[in-house]
Image (cartoon, rainbow, N blue to C red):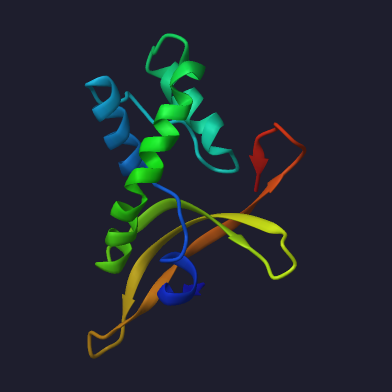
Amino acid sequence: MLWDLDYTLLDAGGSGRAVYRSVFRDLFGRDPDQVAPMGGRTERAIIADTLAMAGINDPARHVDAFIAELTRRAPELQATIAARQPFLDFVFSRVNADGSKQKFQVSGEPMFSQSCRFIGYRGIGVELIARKAGDALTA
């Protein structure tokens, strides 16, 4: 799969594991032991599980602040993409012409032509589909 930067990824919001770790460090003064699995899950579920795994008391109390900081940092990840760096577990949404929403999770690495001209990203992506309101998303 090859993604067009101008059409898909730079217009999208979201964040990857590195941004999660950075937000955690700034909010709690240390790195998390690990980031919860991201595949097929909502941001809230990933954040709550990451906080719980790190031993943060009452994780649900911190989820909104964590989301606010992730949103503020979304341009950092977009800058990584603009600099043609690899990315992992980038989650983004789009609104279709009919008003329906789709959510995707993608990872990719930059691709270059034989003359070293940047031609796009190659990677893998899955659509995240909600089972029902309040449930985790599934791929």
